[in-house]
Length: 283
Image (tube, rainbow, N blue to C red):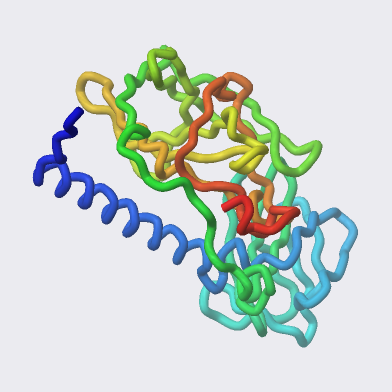
């Protein structure tokens, strides 16, 4: 039986697809390894009304009636580009928001997660960042670029999900669901609002979770639906959240309905840092 060679058009299309994915993956990895990114986080500290000192961080911290408060004395932070000493009140911080301030040797994230004020110091010389050597992935495949249909809810649905930190929950407004099919199997995912206006974001697990991909979650960004509600789910761009790398993350878990019964053999795999055995055997 003879096999026809692929046309030059198909070859060019495949090459463009691979190059575009490689460019995206390279940018994603560069952002992840930013000097003050999540790989640089050295701890997760929960503030209480009782003042406490955080190892390696200037000042004494507590949660006041109006939000996080630090008493610095002669120590110093850089807040909004200016040097601050003495007592400083950050004011109320919205859920899932935060501010970043500077200190000698790094930066400090002052944020609010799950109704609690938290501190996360970030140092460029943290071993997790210094030793980072990239995340293994499945080879990109055109077959994992899937067309779906976005179906908006009559009104956004308040959706409570778990978190990587035990006992913590997150609440999101879900604007709708995405319906699609893989190998004839009808599937759907509850979607949350994405980073840019009109875009969507989905959290999911699948049959590879805990086997070749991170057990707790993966994330996929989806562009805005077109006028007919069509969207593209490129599972080759399914990414790990920070909790796949560090125990100092409070990442949300997928809604229960986003546990796909199929194996999504695309996108990022378990990070080397989480592998118990030789990473070469699992890449």
